[in-house]
Length: 121
Image 1 (cartoon, rainbow, N blue to C red):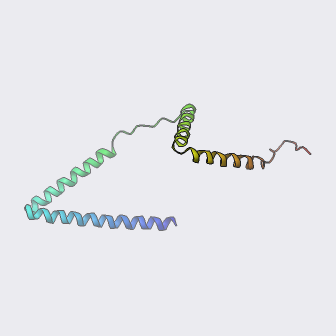
Image 2: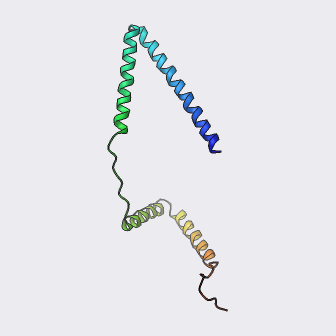
Image 3: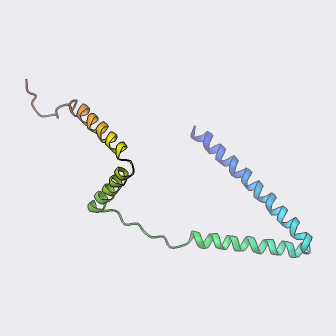
């Protein structure tokens, strides 16, 4: 399945690359109506070089190293998420809490005793 998906991605990339080449050819032909062929090639080449430099500049930009969240920040983020959900749809939050409680009770009763503990008879 993964190989099939990879094959589709590769074919899509190849088709996109051919499409870009045809767009470049069309741009060149359009420019040759306005300029001499050598000038059209120079203009198109300069545009492509500037685009490549812009992409390299964006790619090499400084990346901020994200600081890992501490326990307090993690709890506060979870509380903000829950509070936002409750404010947005309180009836859905109530139903979700009810389902979570039922599941907790349901699975809580089925917990096997830990190894090493004596079972009461």
